View 1 (cartoon, rainbow, N blue to C red):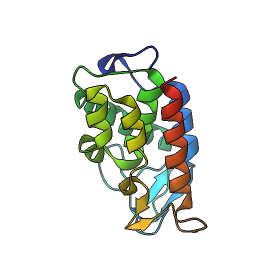
View 2: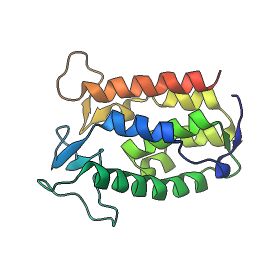
View 3: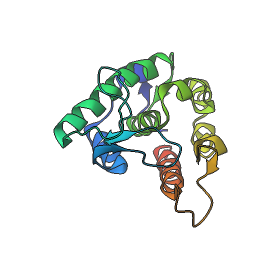
Amino acid sequence: MRNKVLVTGLSLSAAALITLVSSEGFSPVAEIPVKGDRPTFGFGSTYHADGRPVQLGETTTPINALKIAKAHIGKDEQRFRNSLPNAELNQASYDLYIDWVYQYGIGRWSNSPMRDHVIKGEYQQACDALLLPQYRTVAGYDCSTHGNKRCYGVWVRVQERHQRCLDSLQ
């Protein structure tokens, strides 16, 4: 893995923030994006910056949504860095794991095999763990089921993230 530094010295790059919000897409009105998910608005936000959950029908603007996403990411980044004592990553790997945390939550990261592998310096195994079944399901439904119209985009995103992870090892 090229250009590794201690995780404590990294933060989400501007390019990764743009990729993250582009992947999430923008929704001005809170809705359930995938059956079994929480109400979401803006760029995939399920909570307001102050921690209140988003309610169905609430509205937001692109600027406010970006502020909410950045506040959420900022809180999670500190917890993410703290979860990886003395671990090293390069910027590309850091960015994609923060993207993962934004989608799945810091709680799931803290208990994930990716975290354990990164701490041990097992970067290939950390990338491969992105493909585990628990990260391609929504409300118990396997999104990797070809042709499904329920959540196939989740599976596509998992595969794209895995490929970016492998590329970051080169």
